Amino acid sequence: MASPEQGPSPEFATAYRDLMLMGLENEMKATQRVLAAIPDAKRDYKPDPNARTAWELAWHLASADVQMLDEIADRKFAMEARFKEEPKTSAELAAWYEKNFPRAIERVRAMSAEELLTPVDFYGVFTLPDVFYLGFVNNHSIHHRGQLATYLRPMGAKCPSIYGGSYDEPFQGAESNAA
Image 1: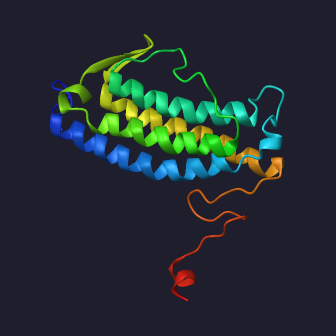
Image 2 (image 1 turned 180 degrees about the vertical axis):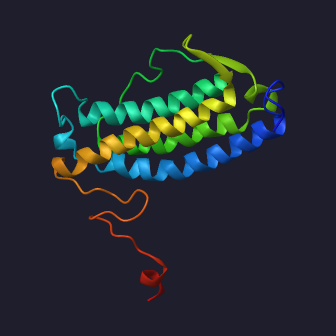
């Protein structure tokens, strides 16, 4: 990495991008399982009157993750929602995410170091080199996936494994798979 006065180097920008995209691709699998676990008949569930419904949260999670990746590739953030037509079922939402998240990742993967280092305004709040917004995508996704995962059991659904076993999907270590 370069000195603070110089900012990040092109090599740092591409290495950081590649590391973050690898992590996002791994997170996508768990997110997709949580999205698919939402019972369609209980999609209006919310744990508190001030909370989003499960469906509102799920669509926000999926669509905003893809939108932010597209905005990184476009080097411009827009407050208006990019995707207007919501899927109708949890299975459709999981399929939509499976199709669009990798597409958006590939757009970012194709960016040059110069593009990644371009300063981009984030709604007038601050301006960072574009590559650093990948951390926002990661944190946003994990944050809302965690919220949504806590909705599942009260909705009567099974909670998928995320970072290890869950009650519904116990951890299967190497010893369990050896038999």
